[in-house]
Amino acid sequence: MMAKPEMRFLPLGSRRLAYEVRGDGPVLVAPAWWVSHLELDWQTAGFRTFWQGLADGYTLVRYDRLGVGMSDRTVYESDLTLDAEVATLSALLDELQLERVTLIGGSSGSCTAIAYAAAHPERVDRLLLYGSYADGAELTPPGVADAILGAVRAHWGLGSRLLGDMFLGRADAAQREGFARIQREAATADTAAAVLKMVYTLDVRARLRAVRVSTAVLHRRDDRAVPYRLGCDVAAAIGGATFTPLPGSAHFPWHGDVESVVSACCRSLGAAHATPRADTPPKWARLTDREREVLDCVARGLNDREIAERLVLSPHTVHRHVANIRTKLGGGSRTAAVAEAARRGLLGDDDAPGAEDGAFG
Image (tube, rainbow, N blue to C red):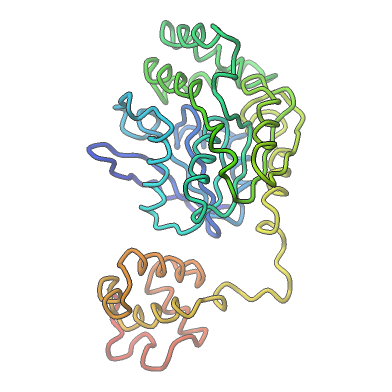
């Protein structure tokens, strides 16, 4: 079972972006899909099964884009662009001081993941793309997108059920109604239509060949929302990408045969999910020399600013090192991390907790 989640809010100007951090381990970040709700989505059994299975052994970060879910509901036209999506993701990674992450890009979130990886390869360890596409104009025949958008704006009740028919494949009536209800609670009709319009206009074709990170693409053969061939096109355009076809018609991976999707995703993530070899050193033994220097300063009671001055680093870099130290030592706080370091004999005697200058900030 994953660790208790933490719901947090990231200030973006005068508004707030809601995000959730859950679990422990290497970080998986899921760029926002279409309309989400951090709290209500997690109450759905299939949704929990998918993310708990995929993110077991990882730290999972999810967020509601501005305008929907638990984020501030005010949304502007300038928010609904690919550049704005990438900027939001970048701001969140900066807030969490994450150096490198795996991006789990699903549906329209795949466009954000692709664009971010192309622009910032140094911060992306790998890409896992599910139900992906590169050109939103290819999602529906000409004129159909306008009809769907019109239905969503005119009658959100009927529009949400129409989208349920598209997104859920062969789901039963109860699942469709549950999906429609959550969508209506997560966004107004106008916001849902505006975000869906963005989905149909996203275009990352020019950025695919700039992706240089390890990439796995998975797609259900009979996906009714994002045609199978579009996922094939994404995999073909990214150098070295692997492609895994999956059975089923539901667009969302938490509907239909969820377990098979989880298994395929975990295989695609590769060694990160594999059982550690017997000769693999534990996390606490893999502290870098710089992290040990920072750890010694933390044990002496220095705060980030003081450590930065002593080691001639930026406060941001120090904070990132401290976060890495806490992860490797399994400590939920600086104090716990130093206590574990002392137990492991990683500190000098004068750095141990309780030493003369060993108070913690």
